[in-house]
Amino acid sequence: MDLKSEISRRRTFAIISHPDAGKTTLTEKLLLFGGAIQTAGAVRSNKIRKTTTSDFMEIEKQRGISVSTSVMAFEYNNIRVNILDTPGHKDFAEDTYRTLSAVDSVILVVDSVKGVEEQTRKLMEVCRMRHTPVMIFINKMDREGLHPYDLLDELEKELSIAVCPYTWPIGSGKQFRGVYNLFKKEIQLFAPDKSSVPESLLCTKDIQDPRLKQYVGEDHVSKLWEEIDFIGDLYETFNINLYREGYLAPLFFGSALNNFGVLELLETFLQIAPCPGPVESSARQVMPFEKNLTGFVFKIHANLDPNHRDRIAFLRICSGKFERNKFYFHTRIKKNLRFSSPASFMANSKSIVEEAYPGDVVGLYDSGNFKIGDTLTEGEMLHFQGVPSFSPEILKEVVNLDPMKTKQLEKGVWQMTDEGVAQLFLQQPGNRKIIGTVGELQYEVIRFRLEHEYGAKCSFSQLPFIKACWITTDDKKELENFIRRKPGAIAYDKENNPVFFAESDWMLKLARENFPSITFHETSDFKLKV
Ligand code: G4P
View 1 (cartoon, rainbow, N blue to C red):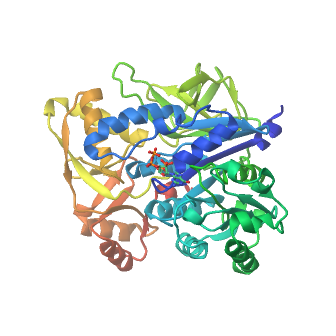
View 2: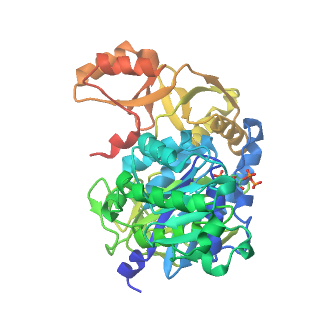
View 3: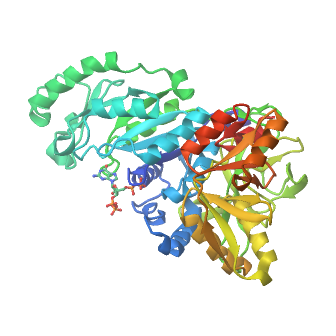
């Protein structure tokens, strides 16, 4: 098959949700359809469960296992589907944000009972920033949930996206009877006990069938027709361009646990979701069907076993064909590297990849050459944009508890922050090391790994800041003035870009007002816009 055909048959996406909305359950059902797993529970056992900080070792153990499900690939109707796994735990949100830079679209799972939740909002913000096409699956329709009108209203308002129902529910909770497919104009009945409904009724286009009233209930049938009349007026009609530009989200109702509505979601997804497209880089736009290979590292997984210090760097291929044992050019360190055992992972097994195409992800064994955002090419000098760091919300200073191991501590902190575990800022005088994260758990991870992998001991002292913003301006004098006036709140990132630590949103607002010529960036995206 030629490169163009390989690209057009690939769909690379992530399933995202607030924890507990049903992401793992839905992933599993999709994998079952694709034949990638044989039994339910295969993904569930790899899920990072809700744990407290003290259970962090348990989380790391699970994270270790979850390497195997970092990318779950399967074939369905000759389409190669790559699902990129995103950790459910909110303290690993940054991992998820970075994974979103490596997908071509997402499926957002929303709990019909809880509606829009905190992580739903944050994840959608990232999707909006990147214009990622979104499909929405309203899950747990077998539970008493919000009325669909209220739910869709909330989604549109809170997520700033127009929705376009593909299916419409008939009742909910104990009264959930199924969905009406507005495009196929057919009813699918929800019957956990399939033998209780005549087979010809389970999926029928004959919406006048008198038996429907008997199985669905007269009230439900008449309410459905009433609601369908309104849907056309209330919501946008489907437009593939609006969907692919990230403005319009096709929406499905169902129950992942009961495997209801999942196949419809998958089949529609395969029809409308985009295949790998152009990717922006520092030098130019890279087209997927270019002959030469390009790709970037969006995730690094460290091996916690001190006897095996190698790490795995996950490379998303953007153009060309990746081949095992061929030399590729690492554009940051300007070195040619060759990979003898690039891997693909699937449900606890891994295999060596001989070749891979745009949209695919390969795991590269790494002894310290890679950091997040690194780019491989066939010689061209370019860096991919779009693996931004986000403004951390917790900032703590590293306190060295063993001065004899200062060097090890330094090395460990730099390496782990290269992996994307957290962000490092340096503050003068004294070269104070400040670690910024989005979750408390990372400090436990760093402390543990410093001790076990690098032999260094540290503790953390909390700083009174809630945000770190990169600051830029054309007005050099004003920047110097600002830095002079806020000495305790200024630090530098690893590339020596100045960063302002804000004690509150109000302080940040004030700084923005008082120094209008300075831009306060909440993501590191600006660095790449050259
Ligand atoms: P997550 O990955 O988004 O965190 O969610 P996950 O799939 O683990 O689902 C969270 C809980 O919701 C699970 O129950 C799961 O069984 C349940 N669930 C998922 N889909 C549906 C659905 O369509 N209907 C109903 N009623 N429940 C659903 P749990 O008790 O937390 O876990 P488990 O003991 O079932 O593993």
